[in-house]
Length: 224
Image (tube, helix red, strand yellow):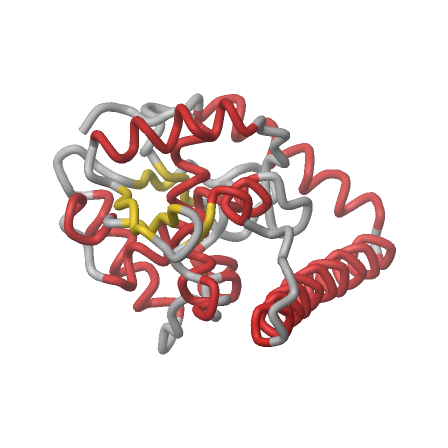
């Protein structure tokens, strides 16, 4: 499989995420997929993909058999096929999706952020799946060198090809330095960010419920 573009990788990550978090609307319509790719919460980096760009990415992923188009009642819908094409178990697919959606993370962060996709017993089980993916040919993930001031190394996905470990290390070091300088304020910021992410996910769930009620009442939905 060739290297993916960031948007192609994001499409896969969104499909894996929404399969677990909003199963009632999965497979996803093109509009729902675009909204997931451009979502402001739980995304790093945040994207502003156009519908034309998304269509091109979907076309390529279909050619690679990484996604499958499913004919719906009114519109085409899409589901991922990562486990079969990449030869990975569902636990590894969940970790890969979280790395694609949220950027480099430690094993502990991955366990927390993937809880809604796959519940790992402990951090060591997360590390086991990561090591397995890192040992594949080609490798799917890479463990970065521990950044100065960081307690744990971070992991990054390789679906888009090799990464610049130096620049990632500088970014991590800068974030750690800011955290040390901010003191208690950094903790408060993390708490606020976590609450904002929770509220964003709650809004997504409410949107799904409203769309389902609209369909049951025969009201035309704009999500498709």
